[in-house]
Amino acid sequence: MTPTPQFSAALAACPLVAILRGLRHTEAPAIGQALVDSGWKLIEVPLNSPEPLLSIGALAKAHPGALVGAGTVLTVRQVHEVHDAGGRMIVAPNFNAEVVREAVRLGMCCLPGVLTATEAFAALDAGATGLKLFPSEMIPPGAVKALRAVLPREAVLLPVGGITTANMAAYLAAGASGFGIGSALFKPGMTADEVKGNARDFLSACAGTIRA
Image 1 (cartoon, rainbow, N blue to C red):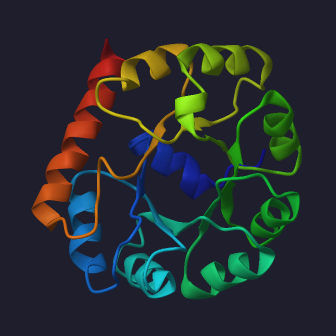
Image 2 (cartoon, one colour):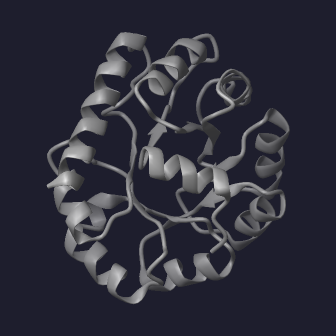
């Protein structure tokens, strides 16, 4: 595991990854500003969004204090495309050792998707910055607790999929480091004000649970 300083700082400031699936590059400035104004530092544009590299480039340029990157990254070629666009974070629904190693070689942080302890250990051995526990509907808090008991103490565990303000507490109590938030945060067509409201609700829920 090789966490980059920027990732560590961003996660400490706000342990939430914004997943902007379906974002259009014309929406990127306003949506990105809404997130940054709300305190979010980790922003992901899945590659199955319209013209995702344009959105990633625009967000990275406008918000150098945030860590911007791509989701649904499946190949080494895509890692290079994201890097060339200005992205510095690679997120995937699966674990591909070549993708992880190339991202790390380029100085990017990498969050591969894992479901089992075997995948989790293999991903960390390959140099993953953290682990996307996906889909979290198949990894309930009890499973996160079991993984936390055997994985290295410093491993970053981020459940993704079906996370709401109501179920964050149980995951945090089980040992989650943070979360990836998708459609509950952003859907295509939402206004920046709607996204800002959702972003603040999630951050308040996370912070309130942590304080409790």
